[in-house]
Image (cartoon, rainbow, N blue to C red):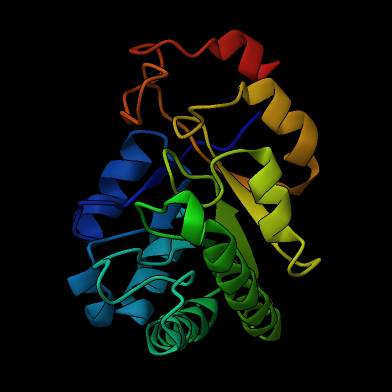
Length: 223
């Protein structure tokens, strides 16, 4: 049996949220919120609520916006270094309360073909640094597959990103694959997947619909 988890995205992380999760049978939480709220996270309070309601703090989604400030694939060294520094701070604080999986977006978009190679190399350099930082905290970095022109749009690019460090793993987002069947994706990188973002879509663009509202064959995916 899989453990049912839910992201905190768009919700205030408090006693009421944990209570609602428990009542709904949700056993795990991914900490995710808008960029402006990350600096105000009360880690000790979240840890206490996790124990009170017996809900595992499964993972932590590192912020991916605002785009003008955060991008680990940026060819602007100042922007890339700021992103890594900020992520380092968050990883240290969240790992201190037992979170050991950190989801990261390998890029922002749009990315054109001319700049793709350079941005891929910058992303790999950043991911190698983050993998070491996470390892020092007893945690791992999970690189999320992304849609459209983002880096990590298919299994080939995910494999390229993971080649930066053997400790890197994958967060498989089921509604982000626009150019590849999920079965082919899983066959190539399945051994590296340590967490998932599960939602449905129309195969045209990401939708984040509930399972069954889109076109994904959930029986085939589950099996």
